[in-house]
Length: 336
Image 1 (tube, one colour):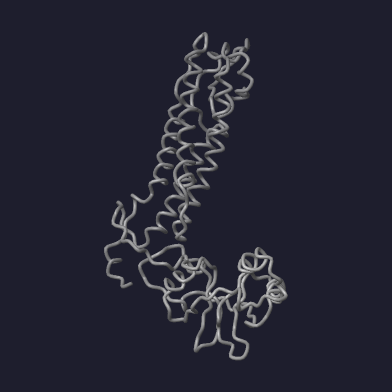
Image 2 (image 1 turned 120 degrees about the horizontal axis):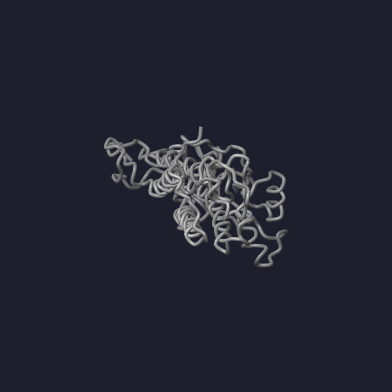
């Protein structure tokens, strides 16, 4: 099972699933032989061992071959593996995960050999270590006390964002609610119609709809002005940035669980733009009705306003999820 959460418990290499399907090559082999073996095994790295003793000497990666052989114009048939590999101290099953992670991070490499009784038993990757790096700082900021703040924040952000997307995008898109509403018989001049019909009209993201009645906003541009083109454009932006906000918040919260940093664009800007465009869409519709001649008899759809506000609050809650959860006091007592 994937370990979503990070805690202050110290993990060891033996707690990981060690990759024992690794490739090994003698230190006296040529670069060409190493490249051929990588291709045969379909791996980007090989553990380099001493020819007679099988002692682990280091690791050779495809990047090393490109940087130290190909880029320099050296002959791969003449260059030896031992002169191109990177040297990294192997870890044992009883070493902390943090130690393996630090060695790979310091050398900017992907794997470290794992030995037991001086024999190679597999390799550990930097990706294997991510979920097992303990929190360095005690999280004491938040309203709700939990044992695993990052996992709680991930699920909280995921649920909030999905609900926000449904309320803010899906519902007005399919006509469950509108931003504004009015009686169809009072809106004939706005739509340029002469036939009097009854029934309620909802102004959603891209269209005005009622019972057996639907007018796309694009059809209202020629009659009612450029404001309706802007409404269509911002309706598109609401949908696009609603989708981007959904994925960016889930991705950024999951990345935090895996100890991966994400940028300002993903963490903050994309979700905020969804909120901004949703607000602008409300404003543009209000302006469109205010400047229409004659002024149509429309009112704010209370259900739509409520759902929109809830959607925006949920997005903001997902962005600032760090302030909702704090580490339980007992976590301080867990030894490093």
